[in-house]
Length: 437
Image (cartoon, rainbow, N blue to C red; front, side, top):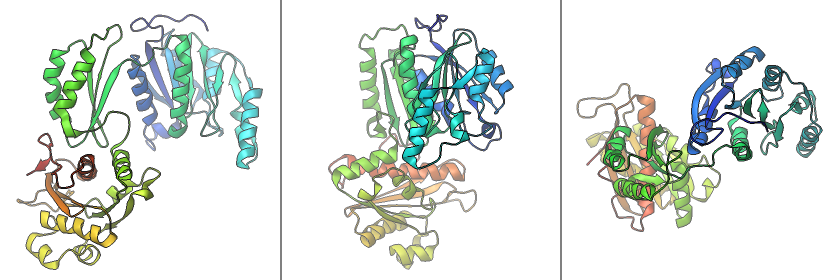
Protein backbone atom coordinates (compact mmCIF):
# COMPACT_ATOMS: atom_id res chain seq x y z
CA UNK A 1 0.00 0.00 0.00
CA UNK A 2 1.16 3.52 -0.69
CA UNK A 3 2.39 6.04 1.82
CA UNK A 4 0.00 8.02 3.95
CA UNK A 5 0.42 11.23 5.89
CA UNK A 6 1.20 11.29 9.58
CA UNK A 7 -1.78 11.83 11.84
CA UNK A 8 -2.11 11.97 15.56
CA UNK A 9 0.85 10.68 17.58
CA UNK A 10 3.37 8.49 15.78
CA UNK A 11 0.83 6.60 13.70
CA UNK A 12 0.23 7.24 9.98
CA UNK A 13 -3.43 6.43 10.61
CA UNK A 14 -3.93 8.37 13.80
CA UNK A 15 -7.02 10.23 12.59
CA UNK A 16 -10.24 8.91 11.13
CA UNK A 17 -13.43 10.15 9.47
CA UNK A 18 -16.65 8.16 9.47
CA UNK A 19 -19.32 8.18 6.76
CA UNK A 20 -22.69 6.55 7.48
CA UNK A 21 -24.65 5.85 4.31
CA UNK A 22 -28.39 5.34 4.07
CA UNK A 23 -31.60 7.22 3.32
CA UNK A 24 -33.12 5.53 6.37
CA UNK A 25 -30.64 7.41 8.58
CA UNK A 26 -31.50 10.80 7.11
CA UNK A 27 -35.22 10.06 7.39
CA UNK A 28 -34.89 9.18 11.05
CA UNK A 29 -36.17 5.65 10.58
CA UNK A 30 -33.16 4.10 12.33
CA UNK A 31 -30.37 5.45 14.53
CA UNK A 32 -26.73 5.50 13.47
CA UNK A 33 -25.42 3.02 16.04
CA UNK A 34 -22.65 1.89 13.68
CA UNK A 35 -20.71 5.14 13.95
CA UNK A 36 -20.96 4.92 17.73
CA UNK A 37 -19.44 1.43 17.75
CA UNK A 38 -16.76 2.30 15.19
CA UNK A 39 -15.75 5.42 17.14
CA UNK A 40 -15.50 3.39 20.34
CA UNK A 41 -13.19 0.86 18.71
CA UNK A 42 -11.00 3.55 17.17
CA UNK A 43 -10.78 5.53 20.40
CA UNK A 44 -9.56 2.42 22.19
CA UNK A 45 -6.64 2.39 19.75
CA UNK A 46 -5.80 6.04 20.30
CA UNK A 47 -7.20 7.03 16.89
CA UNK A 48 -8.91 10.43 16.92
CA UNK A 49 -12.28 10.50 15.16
CA UNK A 50 -12.39 13.93 13.55
CA UNK A 51 -15.84 13.81 11.99
CA UNK A 52 -18.97 11.78 11.37
CA UNK A 53 -21.01 12.44 8.24
CA UNK A 54 -24.40 10.95 7.41
CA UNK A 55 -25.37 10.87 3.74
CA UNK A 56 -28.13 9.35 1.66
CA UNK A 57 -27.92 6.59 -0.92
CA UNK A 58 -26.55 8.86 -3.65
CA UNK A 59 -23.31 8.50 -5.58
CA UNK A 60 -22.69 12.26 -5.56
CA UNK A 61 -23.36 12.63 -1.83
CA UNK A 62 -20.96 9.82 -0.95
CA UNK A 63 -18.35 11.39 -3.22
CA UNK A 64 -18.73 14.78 -1.53
CA UNK A 65 -18.31 13.16 1.88
CA UNK A 66 -15.06 11.56 0.72
CA UNK A 67 -13.85 14.85 -0.77
CA UNK A 68 -14.33 16.47 2.65
CA UNK A 69 -11.76 14.14 4.23
CA UNK A 70 -8.05 14.99 4.07
CA UNK A 71 -5.49 13.05 2.12
CA UNK A 72 -3.81 10.38 4.24
CA UNK A 73 -6.82 9.85 6.49
CA UNK A 74 -8.52 6.65 7.47
CA UNK A 75 -12.11 6.76 6.24
CA UNK A 76 -14.62 4.14 7.36
CA UNK A 77 -17.92 3.95 5.49
CA UNK A 78 -20.87 1.89 6.73
CA UNK A 79 -23.96 1.07 4.73
CA UNK A 80 -24.85 0.77 1.06
CA UNK A 81 -23.20 -2.60 0.37
CA UNK A 82 -26.40 -4.65 0.16
CA UNK A 83 -28.12 -6.31 -2.80
CA UNK A 84 -30.76 -3.67 -3.66
CA UNK A 85 -30.51 -1.00 -6.40
CA UNK A 86 -30.13 1.79 -3.83
CA UNK A 87 -27.01 0.19 -2.33
CA UNK A 88 -24.48 2.36 -4.16
CA UNK A 89 -21.44 2.68 -1.89
CA UNK A 90 -19.22 0.42 -4.03
CA UNK A 91 -20.06 2.34 -7.18
CA UNK A 92 -19.74 5.70 -5.44
CA UNK A 93 -16.28 4.93 -4.06
CA UNK A 94 -15.10 3.71 -7.45
CA UNK A 95 -16.45 6.79 -9.20
CA UNK A 96 -14.85 9.09 -6.62
CA UNK A 97 -11.47 7.33 -6.97
CA UNK A 98 -11.89 7.03 -10.77
CA UNK A 99 -11.26 3.31 -10.84
CA UNK A 100 -13.32 0.59 -12.55
CA UNK A 101 -15.64 -1.86 -10.84
CA UNK A 102 -15.65 -5.50 -11.89
CA UNK A 103 -16.85 -8.84 -10.59
CA UNK A 104 -14.40 -10.49 -8.24
CA UNK A 105 -14.29 -14.25 -8.92
CA UNK A 106 -13.29 -15.08 -5.31
CA UNK A 107 -16.20 -13.04 -3.92
CA UNK A 108 -18.60 -14.53 -6.47
CA UNK A 109 -17.47 -18.05 -5.55
CA UNK A 110 -17.91 -17.29 -1.86
CA UNK A 111 -21.41 -15.89 -2.40
CA UNK A 112 -22.46 -18.82 -4.59
CA UNK A 113 -21.33 -21.22 -1.91
CA UNK A 114 -23.20 -19.21 0.75
CA UNK A 115 -26.39 -19.24 -1.35
CA UNK A 116 -26.14 -22.97 -1.95
CA UNK A 117 -25.69 -23.66 1.76
CA UNK A 118 -28.81 -21.61 2.53
CA UNK A 119 -30.87 -23.09 -0.28
CA UNK A 120 -31.44 -19.78 -2.09
CA UNK A 121 -30.76 -18.76 -5.66
CA UNK A 122 -27.73 -16.73 -6.66
CA UNK A 123 -29.67 -13.83 -8.12
CA UNK A 124 -28.90 -10.45 -9.60
CA UNK A 125 -28.91 -8.74 -6.20
CA UNK A 126 -26.39 -11.12 -4.69
CA UNK A 127 -24.25 -10.85 -7.82
CA UNK A 128 -24.05 -7.07 -7.27
CA UNK A 129 -22.26 -7.76 -4.01
CA UNK A 130 -19.47 -9.53 -5.89
CA UNK A 131 -18.52 -6.25 -7.58
CA UNK A 132 -15.15 -4.93 -6.39
CA UNK A 133 -13.58 -1.49 -7.06
CA UNK A 134 -10.08 -1.90 -8.46
CA UNK A 135 -7.45 -1.54 -5.76
CA UNK A 136 -9.53 -2.82 -2.86
CA UNK A 137 -9.39 -6.17 -1.10
CA UNK A 138 -12.33 -7.92 0.55
CA UNK A 139 -13.36 -9.50 3.85
CA UNK A 140 -15.71 -12.47 4.01
CA UNK A 141 -18.92 -11.70 5.89
CA UNK A 142 -19.46 -14.38 8.57
CA UNK A 143 -23.09 -13.35 9.15
CA UNK A 144 -24.61 -12.03 5.94
CA UNK A 145 -23.68 -11.80 2.31
CA UNK A 146 -22.21 -8.30 1.79
CA UNK A 147 -18.41 -8.50 2.04
CA UNK A 148 -16.35 -5.80 3.69
CA UNK A 149 -13.89 -3.93 1.48
CA UNK A 150 -10.62 -2.24 2.37
CA UNK A 151 -7.51 -0.73 0.84
CA UNK A 152 -5.97 2.52 -0.29
CA UNK A 153 -7.77 4.61 -2.90
CA UNK A 154 -7.68 8.32 -3.65
CA UNK A 155 -4.95 8.91 -1.10
CA UNK A 156 -7.09 7.59 1.76
CA UNK A 157 -7.14 4.33 3.60
CA UNK A 158 -10.70 3.05 3.17
CA UNK A 159 -12.72 0.47 5.06
CA UNK A 160 -16.23 -0.24 3.73
CA UNK A 161 -18.63 -2.09 6.03
CA UNK A 162 -22.24 -3.29 5.73
CA UNK A 163 -24.90 -1.20 7.43
CA UNK A 164 -26.58 -4.02 9.34
CA UNK A 165 -25.01 -3.81 12.84
CA UNK A 166 -24.78 -7.57 13.35
CA UNK A 167 -22.79 -7.81 10.10
CA UNK A 168 -20.80 -4.63 10.66
CA UNK A 169 -19.32 -5.59 14.03
CA UNK A 170 -17.34 -8.73 13.08
CA UNK A 171 -16.15 -7.14 9.84
CA UNK A 172 -15.03 -4.02 11.73
CA UNK A 173 -12.86 -6.16 14.02
CA UNK A 174 -11.39 -8.02 11.06
CA UNK A 175 -10.85 -4.83 9.06
CA UNK A 176 -9.06 -3.04 11.89
CA UNK A 177 -6.83 -6.07 12.39
CA UNK A 178 -5.94 -6.03 8.69
CA UNK A 179 -5.24 -2.28 8.75
CA UNK A 180 -2.67 -2.63 11.53
CA UNK A 181 -0.18 -3.58 8.84
CA UNK A 182 -0.78 -0.16 7.25
CA UNK A 183 -0.04 1.70 10.47
CA UNK A 184 -3.31 1.63 12.42
CA UNK A 185 -2.43 1.72 16.12
CA UNK A 186 -3.08 -1.34 18.19
CA UNK A 187 -5.40 -0.92 21.15
CA UNK A 188 -3.91 1.24 23.87
CA UNK A 189 -3.84 -0.01 27.47
CA UNK A 190 -7.11 1.03 29.10
CA UNK A 191 -9.47 0.16 31.93
CA UNK A 192 -13.24 0.07 31.42
CA UNK A 193 -15.64 -0.09 34.36
CA UNK A 194 -19.40 -0.31 33.76
CA UNK A 195 -21.58 0.99 36.57
CA UNK A 196 -25.27 0.96 37.47
CA UNK A 197 -27.40 3.04 39.83
CA UNK A 198 -24.92 5.95 39.85
CA UNK A 199 -25.61 9.21 38.00
CA UNK A 200 -23.00 10.49 35.56
CA UNK A 201 -22.40 13.69 37.56
CA UNK A 202 -21.88 11.70 40.76
CA UNK A 203 -19.44 9.39 39.03
CA UNK A 204 -17.46 12.26 37.50
CA UNK A 205 -17.20 14.02 40.88
CA UNK A 206 -16.01 10.79 42.48
CA UNK A 207 -13.29 10.44 39.85
CA UNK A 208 -12.08 14.05 40.13
CA UNK A 209 -9.42 13.53 42.83
CA UNK A 210 -8.20 10.44 41.01
CA UNK A 211 -7.89 12.43 37.80
CA UNK A 212 -5.92 15.13 39.55
CA UNK A 213 -3.56 12.50 40.94
CA UNK A 214 -2.96 11.06 37.45
CA UNK A 215 -3.21 13.98 34.98
CA UNK A 216 -1.29 12.06 32.31
CA UNK A 217 -4.19 9.62 31.87
CA UNK A 218 -7.27 10.14 29.71
CA UNK A 219 -10.63 9.86 31.50
CA UNK A 220 -14.04 9.62 29.88
CA UNK A 221 -17.63 8.85 30.90
CA UNK A 222 -20.67 8.10 28.84
CA UNK A 223 -24.28 7.26 29.54
CA UNK A 224 -25.43 3.83 28.35
CA UNK A 225 -28.65 1.87 28.65
CA UNK A 226 -27.76 0.26 31.98
CA UNK A 227 -25.87 3.07 33.68
CA UNK A 228 -22.62 4.95 33.13
CA UNK A 229 -19.35 3.64 31.75
CA UNK A 230 -16.02 5.10 32.82
CA UNK A 231 -12.83 4.52 30.87
CA UNK A 232 -9.26 5.36 31.84
CA UNK A 233 -6.56 5.01 29.21
CA UNK A 234 -3.03 5.91 28.23
CA UNK A 235 -2.95 8.57 25.51
CA UNK A 236 -0.69 8.00 22.49
CA UNK A 237 2.92 8.76 23.32
CA UNK A 238 2.50 8.28 27.06
CA UNK A 239 4.52 5.46 28.58
CA UNK A 240 2.81 3.51 31.34
CA UNK A 241 4.78 3.91 34.52
CA UNK A 242 2.28 1.98 36.57
CA UNK A 243 -0.08 4.92 36.94
CA UNK A 244 -2.87 3.24 34.96
CA UNK A 245 -2.91 0.22 37.26
CA UNK A 246 -2.83 2.47 40.33
CA UNK A 247 -5.68 4.62 39.04
CA UNK A 248 -7.72 1.54 38.12
CA UNK A 249 -7.27 0.03 41.57
CA UNK A 250 -8.28 3.28 43.27
CA UNK A 251 -11.29 3.64 41.00
CA UNK A 252 -12.46 0.08 41.65
CA UNK A 253 -12.15 0.64 45.39
CA UNK A 254 -14.12 3.88 45.21
CA UNK A 255 -16.94 2.43 43.10
CA UNK A 256 -17.23 -0.88 44.91
CA UNK A 257 -20.43 -2.80 44.25
CA UNK A 258 -21.60 -0.20 41.72
CA UNK A 259 -19.37 -1.85 39.07
CA UNK A 260 -21.21 -4.61 37.25
CA UNK A 261 -18.59 -5.39 34.58
CA UNK A 262 -15.06 -4.53 33.44
CA UNK A 263 -15.62 -5.55 29.81
CA UNK A 264 -18.21 -4.80 27.13
CA UNK A 265 -20.89 -7.06 28.53
CA UNK A 266 -24.34 -5.74 29.35
CA UNK A 267 -25.99 -5.90 32.76
CA UNK A 268 -28.64 -8.52 31.85
CA UNK A 269 -25.92 -10.84 30.53
CA UNK A 270 -23.99 -10.45 33.79
CA UNK A 271 -27.13 -11.38 35.75
CA UNK A 272 -27.77 -14.36 33.49
CA UNK A 273 -24.22 -15.61 33.94
CA UNK A 274 -24.45 -15.29 37.71
CA UNK A 275 -27.76 -17.16 37.83
CA UNK A 276 -26.41 -19.90 35.58
CA UNK A 277 -23.24 -20.26 37.63
CA UNK A 278 -25.38 -20.70 40.75
CA UNK A 279 -27.79 -23.05 38.98
CA UNK A 280 -30.47 -20.63 40.21
CA UNK A 281 -33.72 -19.39 38.69
CA UNK A 282 -35.62 -16.11 38.70
CA UNK A 283 -39.18 -15.00 37.97
CA UNK A 284 -40.53 -11.45 37.68
CA UNK A 285 -43.65 -9.52 38.67
CA UNK A 286 -43.89 -6.12 37.00
CA UNK A 287 -46.28 -3.24 37.07
CA UNK A 288 -44.90 0.08 35.74
CA UNK A 289 -42.15 -1.61 33.69
CA UNK A 290 -44.74 -3.81 31.96
CA UNK A 291 -42.45 -6.72 31.09
CA UNK A 292 -39.26 -4.78 30.32
CA UNK A 293 -37.33 -6.60 33.06
CA UNK A 294 -38.40 -9.97 31.66
CA UNK A 295 -37.49 -8.86 28.14
CA UNK A 296 -34.01 -7.79 29.26
CA UNK A 297 -33.43 -11.09 31.03
CA UNK A 298 -34.32 -13.04 27.89
CA UNK A 299 -32.49 -10.98 25.26
CA UNK A 300 -29.56 -13.38 25.15
CA UNK A 301 -29.60 -17.04 24.24
CA UNK A 302 -29.49 -19.41 27.19
CA UNK A 303 -32.09 -17.52 29.22
CA UNK A 304 -34.21 -20.65 29.60
CA UNK A 305 -31.56 -22.08 31.91
CA UNK A 306 -32.35 -19.47 34.56
CA UNK A 307 -35.52 -17.51 33.71
CA UNK A 308 -38.80 -19.23 34.56
CA UNK A 309 -41.23 -16.52 33.49
CA UNK A 310 -42.89 -13.29 34.46
CA UNK A 311 -46.23 -11.62 35.16
CA UNK A 312 -47.27 -8.12 34.11
CA UNK A 313 -49.75 -7.14 36.81
CA UNK A 314 -50.62 -3.57 35.87
CA UNK A 315 -54.07 -3.46 37.46
CA UNK A 316 -54.52 -3.94 41.19
CA UNK A 317 -56.94 -6.82 40.56
CA UNK A 318 -54.24 -8.72 38.71
CA UNK A 319 -51.74 -8.08 41.48
CA UNK A 320 -54.20 -9.90 43.73
CA UNK A 321 -55.15 -12.67 41.29
CA UNK A 322 -51.79 -13.45 39.69
CA UNK A 323 -49.16 -12.80 42.38
CA UNK A 324 -51.28 -13.06 45.52
CA UNK A 325 -50.99 -9.50 46.83
CA UNK A 326 -53.59 -9.21 49.63
CA UNK A 327 -56.41 -6.77 48.93
CA UNK A 328 -56.00 -5.33 52.41
CA UNK A 329 -52.36 -4.52 51.66
CA UNK A 330 -53.32 -2.64 48.51
CA UNK A 331 -56.04 -0.75 50.35
CA UNK A 332 -53.80 0.23 53.24
CA UNK A 333 -50.63 1.19 51.37
CA UNK A 334 -51.48 1.59 47.69
CA UNK A 335 -50.04 -0.22 44.69
CA UNK A 336 -46.88 1.90 44.76
CA UNK A 337 -45.48 0.90 48.13
CA UNK A 338 -42.80 -1.23 49.68
CA UNK A 339 -45.39 -3.55 51.16
CA UNK A 340 -46.93 -4.29 47.78
CA UNK A 341 -43.56 -4.60 46.00
CA UNK A 342 -42.43 -7.10 48.62
CA UNK A 343 -45.65 -9.08 48.32
CA UNK A 344 -45.27 -9.16 44.53
CA UNK A 345 -41.72 -10.51 44.76
CA UNK A 346 -42.70 -13.14 47.33
CA UNK A 347 -45.84 -14.03 45.38
CA UNK A 348 -44.13 -14.61 42.05
CA UNK A 349 -41.41 -16.69 43.71
CA UNK A 350 -44.00 -18.86 45.45
CA UNK A 351 -46.14 -19.20 42.32
CA UNK A 352 -43.26 -20.27 40.07
CA UNK A 353 -40.93 -22.03 42.50
CA UNK A 354 -38.08 -19.75 41.47
CA UNK A 355 -35.07 -19.18 43.70
CA UNK A 356 -35.41 -15.42 43.26
CA UNK A 357 -38.48 -13.25 42.78
CA UNK A 358 -37.98 -9.76 41.33
CA UNK A 359 -40.74 -7.13 41.43
CA UNK A 360 -41.22 -3.53 40.29
CA UNK A 361 -44.13 -1.15 40.96
CA UNK A 362 -44.07 2.61 40.48
CA UNK A 363 -45.30 5.84 38.91
CA UNK A 364 -43.44 6.30 35.64
CA UNK A 365 -45.34 9.47 34.65
CA UNK A 366 -46.12 11.89 33.27
CA UNK A 367 -49.28 11.79 35.41
CA UNK A 368 -50.28 9.87 38.52
CA UNK A 369 -47.95 11.44 41.04
CA UNK A 370 -48.77 13.33 44.20
CA UNK A 371 -47.19 15.10 47.15
CA UNK A 372 -46.12 11.93 48.96
CA UNK A 373 -45.56 9.82 45.86
CA UNK A 374 -44.29 12.10 43.08
CA UNK A 375 -43.76 10.95 39.51
CA UNK A 376 -40.72 8.67 39.41
CA UNK A 377 -41.47 7.01 42.74
CA UNK A 378 -40.70 3.32 42.25
CA UNK A 379 -40.39 0.37 44.60
CA UNK A 380 -38.14 -2.56 43.73
CA UNK A 381 -38.17 -5.81 45.66
CA UNK A 382 -36.15 -9.01 45.49
CA UNK A 383 -37.15 -12.15 47.34
CA UNK A 384 -33.87 -14.06 47.62
CA UNK A 385 -34.77 -17.57 48.73
CA UNK A 386 -37.03 -16.13 51.41
CA UNK A 387 -34.87 -13.12 52.31
CA UNK A 388 -36.83 -10.05 51.23
CA UNK A 389 -35.05 -6.88 50.08
CA UNK A 390 -37.22 -3.82 49.31
CA UNK A 391 -36.13 -0.31 48.31
CA UNK A 392 -37.76 2.96 47.25
CA UNK A 393 -36.40 4.93 44.29
CA UNK A 394 -37.14 8.47 43.10
CA UNK A 395 -36.28 8.63 39.41
CA UNK A 396 -36.11 12.19 38.01
CA UNK A 397 -36.80 11.85 34.29
CA UNK A 398 -39.63 11.37 31.82
CA UNK A 399 -41.71 8.22 31.47
CA UNK A 400 -39.39 6.34 29.13
CA UNK A 401 -36.25 7.15 31.06
CA UNK A 402 -37.86 6.43 34.43
CA UNK A 403 -38.87 2.97 33.24
CA UNK A 404 -35.39 2.24 31.89
CA UNK A 405 -33.81 3.37 35.16
CA UNK A 406 -36.21 1.07 37.01
CA UNK A 407 -35.26 -1.89 34.84
CA UNK A 408 -31.55 -1.24 35.36
CA UNK A 409 -31.99 -0.83 39.12
CA UNK A 410 -34.04 -4.04 39.39
CA UNK A 411 -31.48 -6.07 37.45
CA UNK A 412 -28.61 -4.56 39.37
CA UNK A 413 -30.34 -5.32 42.66
CA UNK A 414 -30.52 -8.98 41.68
CA UNK A 415 -26.89 -8.89 40.50
CA UNK A 416 -25.73 -7.54 43.84
CA UNK A 417 -27.63 -10.24 45.70
CA UNK A 418 -26.10 -12.90 43.46
CA UNK A 419 -22.51 -11.66 43.57
CA UNK A 420 -22.09 -12.56 47.26
CA UNK A 421 -22.74 -15.94 48.77
CA UNK A 422 -25.26 -14.51 51.24
CA UNK A 423 -28.86 -13.99 50.16
CA UNK A 424 -29.60 -12.14 53.40
CA UNK A 425 -27.10 -9.32 52.76
CA UNK A 426 -28.75 -6.03 51.75
CA UNK A 427 -27.81 -5.08 48.17
CA UNK A 428 -27.81 -1.29 48.55
CA UNK A 429 -24.78 1.03 48.40
CA UNK A 430 -24.03 4.55 49.56
CA UNK A 431 -23.30 5.67 46.00
CA UNK A 432 -26.77 4.72 44.73
CA UNK A 433 -28.13 7.97 43.34
CA UNK A 434 -31.89 7.45 43.21
CA UNK A 435 -32.63 5.01 46.02
CA UNK A 436 -34.03 6.10 49.38
CA UNK A 437 -33.55 4.23 52.70
